[in-house]
Every structure is written in C-alpha cells, then in structure tokens.
Length: 370
Image (cartoon, rainbow, N blue to C red; front, side):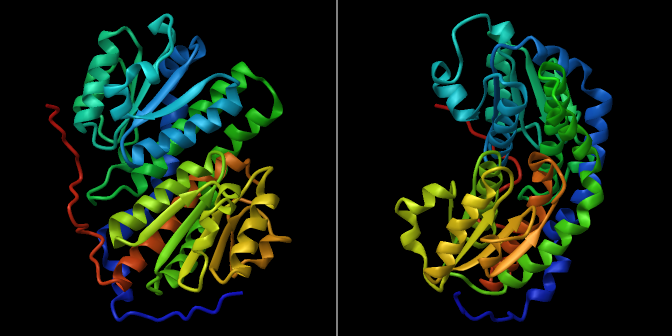
C-alpha cells in the first residue's frame, strides 16, 4: 500500500461555502424530481424510440459523457444500436455517426444543460431539417433548444448557477436512464429490465451513501496529488470521464481516464506515491476490474474504490466506498457523481484554485463556425 501523506490546506473548510458544492449537495433532490418527470412525461419519447432502428445521443463536454453512459446502458437494455457522439462530429462528420436509411427511424437525442449551446442548436436544426426526430434533454424548458425540437425532457430542478455541471448531470442522467429502463422493459420484457426501473425509483433513497463517499472524497482531495487516474468500464466509463473533466476544470490537475483493464496496457506506468487511482466498479466485471486497482496499489499509487459490495480484491484498495450495493449496476450511476465533485472541489482548494470561477470557462459555450 502507498503511504503518500495527506495535508490539510487552510481553505478546506471553505468547501461548504462554494456555490458549486452547495448545488452538488442538492443532487439527490434533483435526481428524484427528474425520475418523476421521466415517469410522467416520457410517453412521446417512448413512442419515438420504440420504432427506432438506431438512436444517436449527442452533447458536448459533460453532456457528451451523459450520452456515453446512457448509450451503453441502452444497448444492453434494448439490444438495439445506441451510439454516442460529440456534437462536433454530428456537425462536421455526420456520415460517420448516422446510418443509411430512413431518417425517421433514426432519432437524435440532444443533451444540453442550458439549451443554449451553439453546437446543440446547430445539430437540432440540421437533424430536424434532415427528417430525424429530435429530442431535447435540458434543464431549461424555455431554452432555444427545447423550443427547437419536437419533444423536450426537462430537469428543471437540475438547473444551476455554477459554471461547471453537477446536479444537472446527475439529474439528466437519471431521467434518461429511467426512460431507457421503461423502453427496455417493453422491448426486452425480462426481469432485469423491470429491476432497472424499480431500482432507479428507489435510488434517491440511497443518497446518504453518496454523501458518505463524498466525505472520503473531501479527505483525499486535501492532498495536492501530482495526477489522478479514474477507471470505469461499460456505462461507468462516461461517469469516469466526467470525474476527469471536473478535476481538470476546477483544479487544472493532470487527470486521466481509462477502462480498467486498458489501464494495464501502458498507462499503469503512471503509478507512484503521487498518483491517486480511483475505480468506479460495479456489475459483472467488478471483480476483475478490482484486481487492477489492487495492482496499482501494489505499485505505489494511492487507490480508492467506489463499489457495490466488499470482498477481495476490492478490500486491497486503500479506500473503499460502497454505493448502491443491492441496486441494478446501472441504477447506481447517478450516485457516483457527488463523491467525484467532493474530490475535485477539495483538490481545487488544496491547489489554491477557486472552483466557482474556473479559469477560461463560462457556463454556456458558443461557437461561430467559419
């Protein structure tokens, strides 16, 4: 095990006074509201998706990582092709992400917290003009994106003032997962799909597990690490990417994201006492993936596992946080964001950064193509 020392920066107590942290801390309420919205307002979306031959989910930055996670869950739940692509690829390389065939059977789900991101509006306009049913997923029901699409899913309680996304990510993710669970139960009526829907509905009741893991994140964030590596496989890869983005946005630390077993093919050379390796583990591959974390610990890295259940080799990690142990593996995904925010924001303070005012960033990104 590594013994890289922790140090408490003088400003760590200020975490509770950060707008970004306060908004992240209300994610449980926003998630519950988003799940209710999905149950009440998903009829039009389900009608579109039931007849789809391929579904494209797209966004930019954090919204793209939501798309990655949801597409992975949807492929398993529906046994149909769901793909995720950044907005830029849809605009600049549409033939690489759209299949040949009837555009009416290829709906496009555009994800944008603000509903004002320029690329999101461009994609909605272009896809709508080409005949693709377009679905907006946003936190602002009166946004240009919501108005530009035929159907909108709105997580109003997920909206936020902070520049970087926190509760908006978790709530929009939960909303989309709930719809995919319903769709999967209709297309593939097996017990596992019903379990996903019911487990998502009770997932907010386990918010205390996310806050407990966040306490560990705050403590680990008190060390100014040289590098943080986040590992996640399957749907958790999108969550790991969001952790990496939050670390980069708020603290400007070197953060790397890998699928767990891929980490062994070269990047494991990063392991040393100045590196924190985090594993977002769960599902059928958790035991094999936990062995990678144990190997990283043996090579000198500090390690933290966020898993569903204890037991070898997960217990070989320096830190273990259990979240959603009896939930369907995909139902626990929204709970994994808050601990990552705790790590990122605490680390930002440890490095002398103000995560409420991340450098070079604004809440809405606008891009005027040449």
